[in-house]
Image (cartoon, rainbow, N blue to C red; front, side):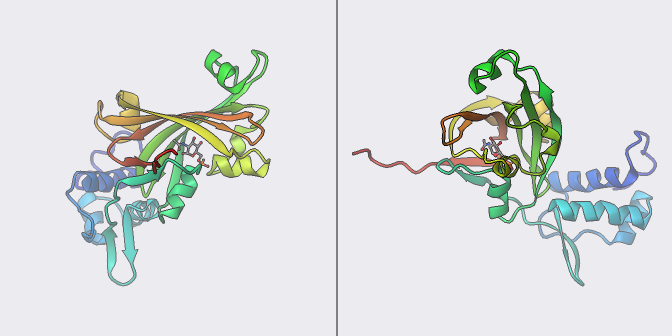
Length: 245
Ligand code: 16G
């Protein structure tokens, strides 16, 4: 972490730069799961920052799930995340999936607002050119690791205020009786471009699983059209198959 203060030319707050330096050390394997983090004083001296800055960076990494604090014994690198095994036979939300695994979820907003629909959105959501579409795009992060980018489109009449979506889209839809009960999902393999690989913190060209989900209400009305990009190195999609009679 040395030299953080002296190289602090880019304007980002010091604690965020330190947070990134610690996270990078974990990602590059310089610190492995179970390793104790050097003491607050040690880090502060090496990085030439105050202990308050170190505390703030460490607190955020604990909140993200990358570090764990054990009372009396210090701060450690959290156990490595296994590949996520995701059932293809249940209609669940990202928040529910991760909560069930005891993982901490965070989303970074990439876009949200009301727009005129694209021809594809008009077709899939059954909108006329006079109607509007609500778009919400998020980077979905579990235990500090970005796992997927999800770009959802819904009719603006279903979601008139995208800003009101909290941490879970499905929880928001549930409140107005619009939670989908059925979905059709198409999964295809792809390679990540520069922008998406940067967001997902993997090398450009890494494998991804691109998922298109169209979900429906009981009435048969399409409620959600979502294009997602999942990290190929982090996900296994699992379905149970039966011999048809
Ligand atoms: C899942 C869905 C996505 C849905 C989201 C809602 C896939 C590929 N995608 O991630 O379509 O919008 O859940 O999650 O499974 P939320 O309620 O946590 O916002």
